[in-house]
Amino acid sequence: MSEFDVIVIGGGSTGTAVARDCAMRGFQTLLLERGDIASATVGTCAGMISSGLKYMDEPEIVDMCSDEVVHLNRIARHLIMKNPILTPMLKMSDLSTGGNFAEEYSKRAKEREVPPVLFLTPEDSIKIEPKLNPEIIASMYFEEFFIDPFRFCLLQALDAARNDAIIRTYCEVTDILTDENGVTGVEFYNRLEGKIETENAKIIVNAAGPWVPRIAGLAEATAEIRPNKGAHVIFDRRIVNVGIIARALDGRMIYLFPHENTSLLGTTALDTWEDPDILVASQDEIEYLIKSMEWVVPSLREARIIRTMEGVRPLIADWKKPEGEVTRGYEILDHDAEGVEGLISFTGGKLVMCRHMAEAATDLVAEKLGTNTECKTHLRPLPGNEDDIDILSLSKEYKVSQHALERMRARRGTEMQKVLKLLNENPSWRTTVCTCEPVIEAEVRYAIQEEFPQTLDDLRRRLRLGTGPCQATFCTYKAAAIMADEMDLSGTQFQLEVLDYLAERWKGKRPPLRDVSISQEEVLQGAYACVGNLDHEEIDYRKKPWEEVR
Ligand SMILES: Cc1cc2nc3c(=O)[nH]c(=O)nc-3n(C[C@H](O)[C@H](O)[C@H](O)COP(=O)(O)OP(=O)(O)OC[C@H]3O[C@@H](n4cnc5c(N)ncnc54)[C@H](O)[C@@H]3O)c2cc1C
Image (tube, rainbow, N blue to C red; front, side, top):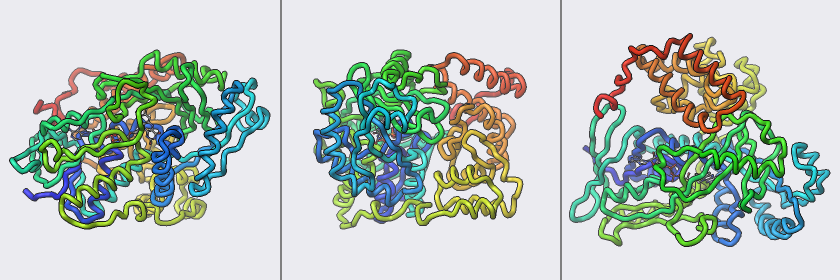
């Protein structure tokens, strides 16, 4: 057994950023994630890499977020979308708050390469977004950036691996090993092979999001958070041309953002003591969001909801105040102070600041290891961000539609050429597997070969497979067949993949199920249970190794 310099626990935005920074500074790094990369909180977020202006009374956070937007636009440009945003105003008092925001926002707008805030008349606002309530008295126009959280975390993990880190998914840390000098390593359950393993390290970084307190507790250390539930409602298409930010029924700010080829309505923010693993959006949350946004987009209720998405923000444990007043900054806990030498935990933070969080933690790791190293994560591009891509000529050369290639570029930038080269040997891999996104067979095969997915749900995170209007009705069989071929799955494993994936999709579809979604669900269940014969009793549900052991 080798000894690592650092073991990072958690493969969300924070953990993958730490692994990348540690590996780039030359530390022997191992990242352990109990599920897939980005399979928890970060995968439920809106992906907004905002200038931090929601937190205007915390100027250091506004500065940090503004800097991070600039860095992310340098290193991950291909994963970033710029969204215009309108904040419609329904009464005069909204104008004064808007004025303060406009002044702060505009200060650093040039650096972020966005125009300063504009105030628009109702007529101009409705020209930009015809679905707005005609009774608005004005609106504020500004621009913010959004990133694909799944690809961002995956690319951080892949970049860490290219710098010699070892990334292991489906490895759940079950104990932190210590001796009289502090931490010595971890024990973990390898869910793929169904066995307990241990690895040694000098430093352990606990980046387990809402599970940070549980991980710290394994070493008898303390890390408290204020767990805060957030839910989104997802619509089947881009129902607005621009993002809308508005006051909710209770005065909080909520948003409706076009996101990839869907729209996100969010978010709630509730103190929660529910298990983050079994969280669902409640009917109250769904209705609160719709009723609140209906004031400014009156036709919203007619749009088709495809699912909800919910997660727990691991906020800093600041109590006895409304959650909205809790800082969105982060803290790094050095557990040396309580006698657990070598254990570092995060509380708080956001996706947009994950690189900054990682830099601060890696500086501490370097200090503990007694080395003097420099952070380069804000300078070096993530894989695929090295150059521009000429979609038109690639479309002509490889005979793949420009639309499919645009979507592929948004996932992989220059590395899409590696996918397209597969077509030279395998021309039939042009077939479209997921028509909503769209995704072609070559990309599914490439992702399986190069991006270590273990399940169809992991492929969803790599490719946005099954996330569109049909919610996996038409792509699941095709993708499972490709996976069976690439990974040499047995017939039973193939069936289990399909069933597991559909069950996972069902979790988010169930809370808002109504109207036409019910008919669509019937088509899906009919297709898989009846035509696909997947509801027969003989399937051995215990064929996966971890089920046999537990
Ligand atoms: C609804 C919502 C909307 C949000 N919107 C935004 C936004 O627009 N912009 C923004 O900047 N931020 C946003 N945030 C905040 C942001 O998503 C989180 O702060 C951030 O993603 C947390 O990332 P993380 O890596 O710390 O946690 P996670 O993503 O939860 O990662 C922790 C990982 O640790 C793993 N883990 C847990 N226990 C173990 C174990 N025993 N062994 C191994 N691995 C383990 C988990 O499986 C998980 O993958 C939002 C949050 C929510 C809930």
